[in-house]
View 1 (cartoon, helix red, strand yellow):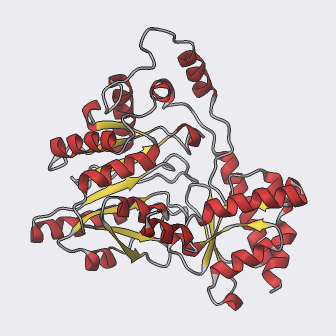
View 2 (view 1 turned 30 degrees about the vertical axis):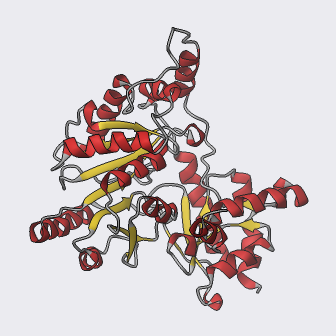
Length: 396
């Protein structure tokens, strides 16, 4: 018999809403033709991996040495960990040793391992809204509770709200920058304010919650904007990330955990996260792609197509009369549901299907009254959707 709580989650209207939209899109494309369906449901990067990655794949595939497909330490190959340490050091502005890296099965695997390492039953994880909806499940996987807090009107961190949410059972705060679904980048000032709040809480209670930075979109930014370095600002900080978005390798499931060397319990956290990697059933990150990213993590990527598509899409939204949050990065546009729909984003995204438009409702991200457009799709899809969005905005 299927577990009752899993059954309830599966049958929830917001459960798996993004994937469900994607699957509905496949049906519509078969019925009406792919060129007549505007599928913006899934954040599946459509840029090809850069040449340096392709060459690393070919090189790795030609390796036939004895044991090349065998186990390695659960934390990953030493060479891969050293390479990710170099990458993290450049991003964070401080020296990070390879011993503070744990290779993972994507950012999702990294986040689950980190949460299992940190959470006692009943512990809370604070998550600013809107947020990537799978956080709910990842936290509950490890007997924790999600504590959602609102962001400000511009989607920047509301550290007063975070301070009010803190308690003695707060284990961590998850931040995602650039954010999915808003594309917002949290500023240096945001991070400094968050660190001050958590340090004050730690001095008062003796428990310093971790900041978990979920950063698969870190490299995809617009207008010269950069994601803030968090390690120099706060000691108990861990980065979870992957190469799914920046190198367009989502299906290869390769990522890593990076722990701040200044962490107050560095040795214990690393041992716990390695143990969690093993007992969650991952055992280790895929050997093949550990070797690939060791050779190609610093590949030069051109994200200008995403920025161009963003501009094209915002022009269509302006034409159709939609309000939206202009993104700083990633490849999502968060759009306000028209006023006459009274914030019912579930009903409005169902309405969009009548025009063969597939978008994810904001309620699935803790952002009721909005919907998300993933513009990692062809320019043809974006440009051809213009009149469909215009009609959808005016008819009910």
